[in-house]
Image (tube, rainbow, N blue to C red; front, side, top):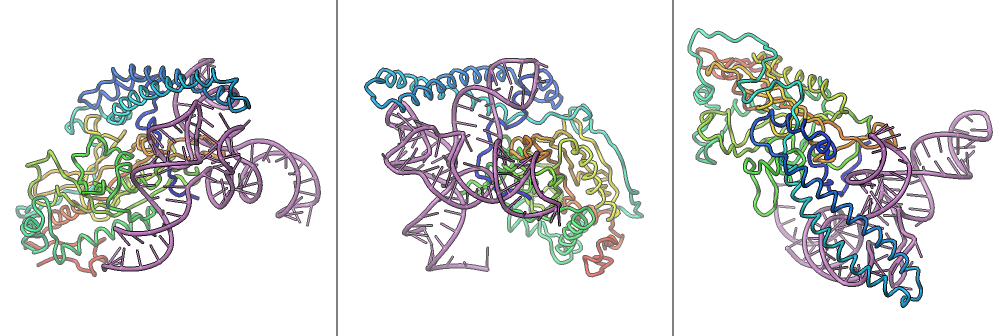
Length: 438
RNA sequence: GGAGAGGUGGCCGAGUCGGCUGAAGGCGCUCGCCUGCUAAGCGAGUGUACGGAUUAAACCCGUACCGAGGGUUCGAAUCCCUCCCUCUCCGCCA
């Protein structure tokens, strides 16, 4: 059904948007990418693209001549008759070599340019510069009322002896946490609860992928080359710690051609995630919200192009279902063009209510990448046997960020006596316990 | 870490002292024929990317691709160099 790993490298021309599409729609591409804000310079594209095609044309014409003449030389028994041809071909070969060197330079320049171009936002995305302009699309659940001053989760957790930031700091440093006893068990319960829900009710296939990946995988999903600074890199082996399961799971089918009948393909994976959080100094310094290492259950889909929009809605609903079952209040926002991630064409964030801060905080991000990652990673499918390969659409979303879910439970279910009630849906995963502490 | 073997099309598998091999042969698959049905049999077809041409796609023309990159040569799957990967044995290890 599904083919195994081919060895072929991704064609460099498939690094972003269709080369022909950019060429033919330069103004539209410029306009739509412009809605993301920031600097955008496509002026060199036209020049490089034209140079490339000129060089390619000249080089290939000479190669055609070389092939013809060499074949003639091969068929001539008496080589003395073709000494002139041989001498001429020697010069043609030198010319080809020179052209190809120029071509290689131009293509590398073009590739550099294309690899750092983000995806085109969908036309339906709200226009805007920052998260201020995101559009709220729904709210669910009722915000809990407290007869006392609700505490932040770090106080609740430390008081219960289930969260230990101080010792984590000693062991590793800032932005690390240690879970203990019922805290550790709660985290593990959440992972199992989420995986069971997505594999059982939502029919995703469970994956346990490698947590370290190579450069090609990181480039395929769009983390590289632009965001290397955010990634942990291993010494000596050129491997990166994954910042999300999206990377290894989407790359499962890199350089593959799937059958139409395989789609949509649904995967879910629990992994730890590792992020440098460079550039976020001073933000969320307390608590579990922003860590160098955190757990996440991810949902990944491969779909046919015409299905991806509907599949994004389902993916979002699948992620929302986790919060509904846990009875945690949340809202969904439609990210504006300026707040979209590099690879995403459309993104819905789910934000859970955190009483101590009195705000909604992101707990899931569900995106449609359309063919952006599929191009970079060469993930294709055939509509029918013998048909031309087309790019699939890829999607993914958190289902959910486990640490932040634990935060939400501690804060929303906290009691005046310092104990925390366990959501009903989670009790079977905690030996039936109804409460932590107290 | 040490020793050895190998990487060819969807798969298996040939490639002679470099030349007409995108690549024999087989299998699979698709279409057609034949046959009460099935099986067998017969015939044809069956990679991808880029560029050109085209209103556009297909067809067509050209180029490239036999793990990757470089070299020798008029010409390389075939010769040389470097790297990567896989397998087997030994060692080490959860």
